[in-house]
Image (cartoon, rainbow, N blue to C red):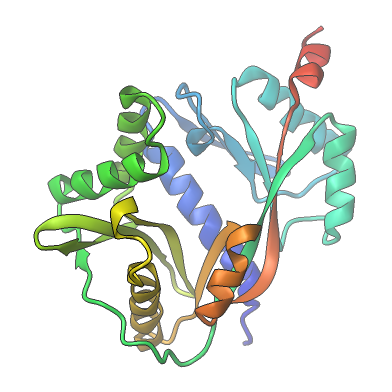
Length: 259
């Protein structure tokens, strides 16, 4: 049976986001007709979102109700969601009060790797995971308060079904990546390099290593990235395979629904 890798990438994204959501203290994952969602006390999309959509007007309205109840709440529209036509999903969500905040490119590497890669160290226990997760949170959320970064790191280290890898230079943790493995595809997430070490090809080498290891298992690699990063990943052999559209309720609509 031929695998639709665009939809496989969506399933991998679901797995990853819900793993992180479940791992966030105080969160719960729910499954209602037309969607799955994660709801948490931490005011961040890592544990406040909905995905795996089967939209109709009633489902979209229910999502709006959940969004009002949470301080932050993202709705992810991906390949494989229903209706199949993304413009129809957009219309249903907009009519319910949502606004498209931003889009991500869904990308796929499905070829024989040619790069050499670089040796990465897998975090084998919770202590090692904590070190890598704290590094990731510091890179991505360096301008946020310490407690915010700590809570993001806690979710990352606790999601043990997601593998964390690091690259150290002269004993200094310099770069890291998260890999989400499943039976169909490997997902590449949270690729990050310490600012002082950028421009040396470390990110490229890490990507080469991830796709090389996936190829050994006969698996392609997927990722989601901001549109501005798409050309860089295309330069590493990835191709655009779909789009991820991210919606939330604007403040004025949130107030109107409450009233």
